Image (cartoon, rainbow, N blue to C red; front, side, top):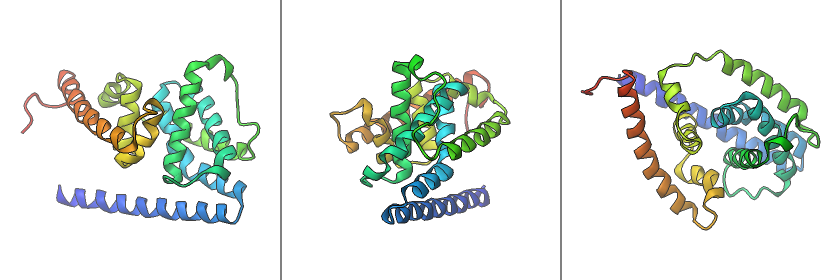
Length: 217
């Protein structure tokens, strides 16, 4: 068990170093005013995980495709104005959730939409096709079914904290569109409490489904 935990920590550290290097690379490209290259690297580096987030969030591949396209366009158009208050990775998730909210309000206006204004449309399409092909190979298990039955916000919270490992303040930034009057710290505190309740709910559902023992040691 300890060896497994050590391996997990080592893998997390390596992945964190990769992300930091990617952030530095993108920032360097932005500083050099190479915005096309910066946007391309952002979509290449973070696009797969953001698209996976949208598939889980929306539970529909076609809708996730449309929202991902819009998100990439928003990133390209807003990259020059990005102020760096968070990592670019976190900002990508913020854009994705905002795009998803707009899509839910008027899905008929997004039908068949693809990135048109953006010069990163080709890389976005490649990321989309490769990522979705990979996601289709995943076998649904009992825990995935429990996750899919959660509310959209709870699915987002679970993915961002457990699967993506975002800090509470970064998750709060993604959720801020629902709490415009609150600070990042206030939203983070509420989300931490919500996450604790969510863990209990998932554990109870898993017990009911026979996925974990009734009495844990």
